[in-house]
Amino acid sequence: MRLYRTRFCLFWIFILLSSGLKAQTEYRWLSRPHAIKSLDSLLHQAPSMALKADFYPHGFLDSLLLIPAKSRQSIDSISLEKKIQFLAQSFFEDLTFGNPRPSFKFQGYVFELRKNEIGQLLHSYLEKQSVVNLVKYLNESSFEVKTLLTILQSKQDSVMNPSKLAQLTLSINHYRWLHHIRKNKVVSVVNIPAAQLKVYQGNQIALRMKVVVGRPARPTRVLTAQIKNIIINPNWYVPRSIATEELLPEIQKNIRYFYASHLDLLDRNNQLVDAKTVNWKALSKNYFPYTFRQKTGVWNTLGILKIPFENPYRLYLHDTSEKKLFSSSKRFFSHGCIRLEDPIRFGKMLLGPNSRAMDTLKIEGPYYNIPSKWIKVNKPAPLIIWYNLIDFDEKGEVVYLENVYK
Image (tube, rainbow, N blue to C red):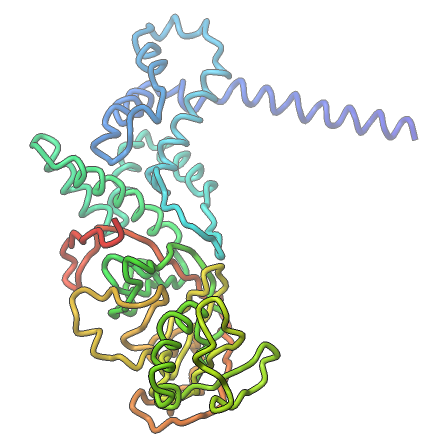
């Protein structure tokens, strides 16, 4: 047993020593002074790429380049090599993932940042002595990033509104992140200021539609989530704030409003209550032991389709009975949820092979009190709701948006 342990230890000592010798003899950067010079130049140019130069403490590179090549042999090569590699990795990760990246109030879907890919790319381009070409590749892979960088670089020698410059820089980095995470997957993105939904398949926009989002007093929250189900002919369980602040006062004026709104009244045990037996005048915002449930149908506030997703704000995507709102250029009318211009088309895209259940659905169909039906989404369907003040229209032109939630 002792002999086995001794051999095992000797084996690992040999591996570690071999690794150390290899590390001491392989200097990817130090053996390529031209690549170090290129990296140093690129770091100085960081602001023209929407990155801050002070992200990268590269003063030691400036000093290193002033030292004659023969004198560099006395430097701690292993330590220096690691330092240069770390600096380069940070810079190229920022060119890929953005810095800063979008922040979200809630992350129900965590997107993987594939840092190993950056290391592999950097190694490949370094072998060819072309780290400048890697910068070009990363900055031109995304249409949005390439377009906005062109604008940024054209404005650097002129006077530009500081807030507009800050937003341009921020958006470039956010689109870098979006470009990376939408590779090889379908991602649905709602941009709140644009009041628009886009479904990306890689770099292609597979679907685009108008949406109605939250009014400034009841804003839609920024988040990431995963769509797992859709609901055909959903009931609407009216949020308490809407029930007591908006519906109750109308019902107290005239009970007919209750019936005209196609509502059910549920008690605390979720049992139906006859509205005629209720003393409506005794109810208030502070005393309301009921829940309103709107029957399914084309008049339903959620329309004929609801797309739920896990989040702490009770937000979801849905059809709507108020189609006229989509004709407005400023679509900030909801209580926070997101109303879809073409919910059936979006639902079919999410369901893929399971979309047959929706083939007979029509927005104008004569639906009345039909039981709700849940359908599972087979593939992961990530959703991003973000707040980006720069977007692109159908022609690919840049659109600067109003900050409605300022």
